[in-house]
Length: 90
Image 1 (tube, helix red, strand yellow):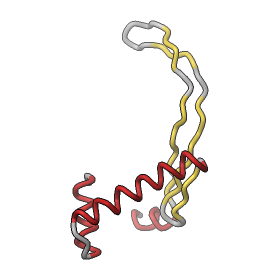
Image 2 (spheres, helix red, strand yellow; image 1 turned 180 degrees about the vertical axis):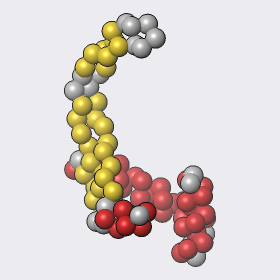
Image 3 (cartoon, one colour; image 1 turned 180 degrees about the horizontal axis):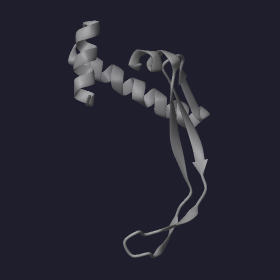
């Protein structure tokens, strides 16, 4: 499902216009990003939990050339499915 498909689904299910559904989805995504930046975790109980994890710098290897490369430190996002999401899919 693409963002456009999701916006269309949201508009149909809620009676919102596509423009309003787009703004709602964009606001939700911005809220998740803000929560991750500010608190490091966003939990939508029963559905999904987003969390940040600090990854240290490390050395890697280019598989094609064998050259050693430096991989810089970064912040990664982990996603854990909640019970309602798991139940819906199984």
